[in-house]
Length: 87
Image (cartoon, rainbow, N blue to C red):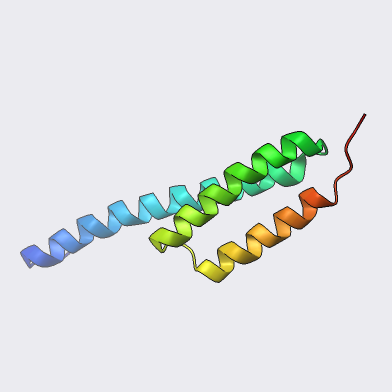
């Protein structure tokens, strides 16, 4: 266990950051799965907007790399664009 006051504070900060980062990454994965799980183009576009917004926000905060966000956005956008509109 840490003996210095500053080291104890660092441990507390690390725990908070770890939980925050895990929650953010989990949310990203969940939103991407939602996009891939639907065959309805309109619903997929709604999920796509939500996923893209979250990816951009997390990349801006540094939780994921901007190129990783771009790659994931590209892949889900390509998937949605290839869906056909059901009549």
